[in-house]
Length: 384
Image (cartoon, rainbow, N blue to C red; front, side, top):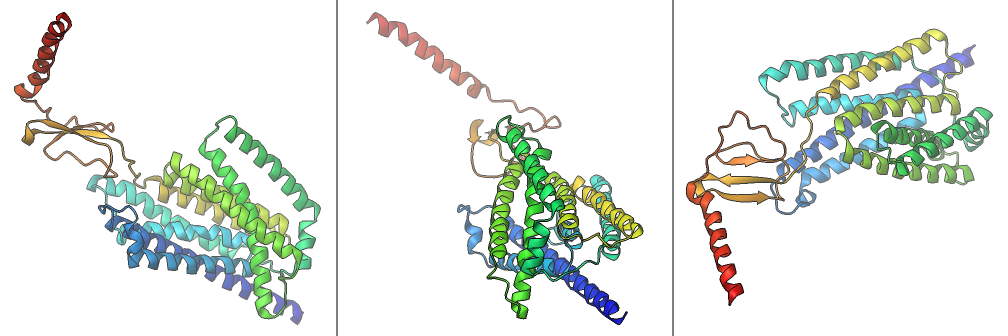
């Protein structure tokens, strides 16, 4: 009996270490992205589009990203996938708070209650859901030696799951490439399917590296090389599909949908590959799913009313102080400037509240005169 209690104590300790590492890593990643965004904002008017590479803040953010992702990587070796994967909600929660405080993202007074009220409610729901799924999450933990990983890999549930995943991935890829099905759900399902492979391989590689550091060599087994190659390949293809999604859809919508799909597939992968819910009772599973659902709802509320970024579109301005000379803006600023004394149109901007500008008579008639003069000279030239 003492042996079982000692094993349970070690398992809870490992889960605690993995959970704290995941929280720490996600917080650092959020801070790093905010610092890098601040560097981009401060250098937005520079002529060199890559001027932010020469700032200390951008490199500080890059360093924080490396440390945070390393902490996330190590956390998979200690805690189950069902605990680590949903903790990405900490990154969303931290980013929303830092975006309000550090970057001073503000809205109009009339929109404050609607926008930040929902964000505040989403933060509360997310914190409550995170507490539930961490408290009632699986407590399964095993030493990820090469023999155990191979044993999991050749089991029929995992082989069936991988077969269904490959078939589903090929069908989605066919519709995406051949039928131009550029729907957000299709792209993010591809990302989530690759993500399930990523978390399986990351946990295996991380676990074998930790055991090697502790003194049990695992790097000379072929399964380690296989898992490492699959991990790198799946991460690269995930980044490519996410890049395509960011070009077509709003980033806040991508963040919420991707979190829901990727977390769901990661939990299913952990349950089948590492048998994380094998010894859990129904009550713990139901409470875990309740907390997970609360996190999904909280992330959706946090990202729902996030201000959308405006892409640049060419526009024309007519400066009334300079004889109404029109200027075409095809490059330069990312967002079209607001009305500030010059008549502007384009980029579907609503200027109903602005009085229409009246062009000077000389400006309107000068092209007509020039045209008539040119037309009068044409017949004489032909006669000659």
